[in-house]
Image 1 (cartoon, rainbow, N blue to C red):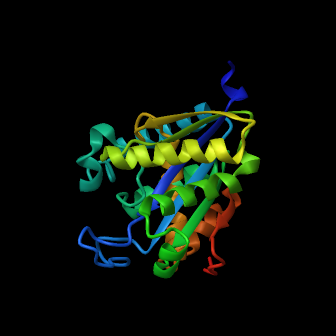
Image 2: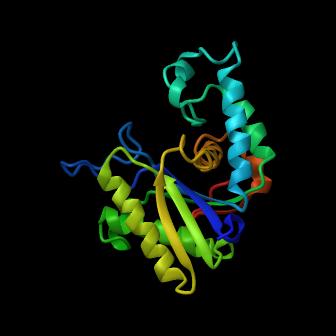
Image 3: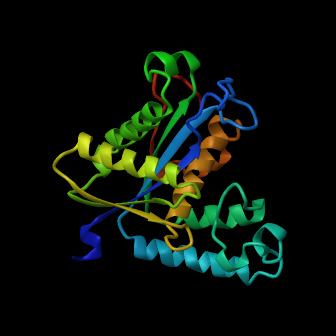
Length: 237
């Protein structure tokens, strides 16, 4: 089948679904636990072209004598990929300009953690909370779903986290639209460069919503179709 007859989607997760420690202590907003759970979904109709542009940008960084030996780059030199939280500002600037020229569109779902809602709606179960936000992500992505879809997400260090997202994606796709086919694949960002786009989209939205720094979002806002904030939480961009 021709590559372009398929629809390619790339999913990235930011934050975590936890509310309590193993001992039952409420830890949301602490250094061990985020105050939100967020997912980005990026649709790229021609991933081959996007991969080429990303690889060219990686090669440019690694051959730039001003940047290549920055510690955060040097220590991961042989498997370097763009990762917003690890990249220094100069590297982020380069990649943001690359993203500006790649043809893609994305949506983001951002859910601030609410302790009362966690108990009332999600029956205080992390897996229910997690599955629901993934389901909402794909429900809002309806116009981005084609008849034949390939969904990528990043391989996780912990197998249980990987299985949780894999199961949630499959359930969401199966329940929200029974008339589509889909394949869900697990990859690393070095083996599947387009995952790096989803990582950066998550980061720029997080910087705007959580850190109050909207300039990155404003620069790529034409690539972001929608930001979903469930439960009527109003957070300005």
